[in-house]
Length: 125
Image (cartoon, rainbow, N blue to C red; front, side, top):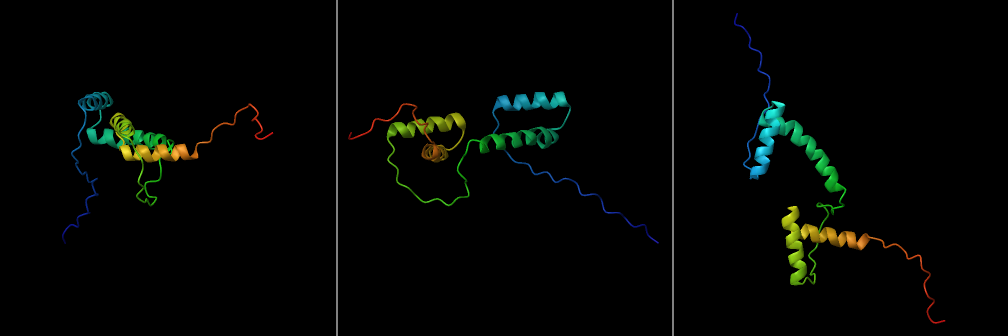
């Protein structure tokens, strides 16, 4: 009678992706994971993933438009100065300029101004 083998437990499959990292991030990650005594995979799985939850909450709090909402093309009157402002903002934030523009439009459209405490003058009296 031959011995029956038990199936080996499934191991966690790891997929590798090449991602451009700034040197400052590389150095900081290496320093932090060395201090914690964990592998790069463990660092990403625990520390970075915990940061992701906080980051998603913070970005969701900005009120970005729903990316799943259907869109229609709109012809907008944008001067070179406005386009340049959004390009600079895109470079600073890392968010696409068109997403910043759509978000700005949404916020401007729903923002309610405070009513002035001064009484309005009656017109025509």
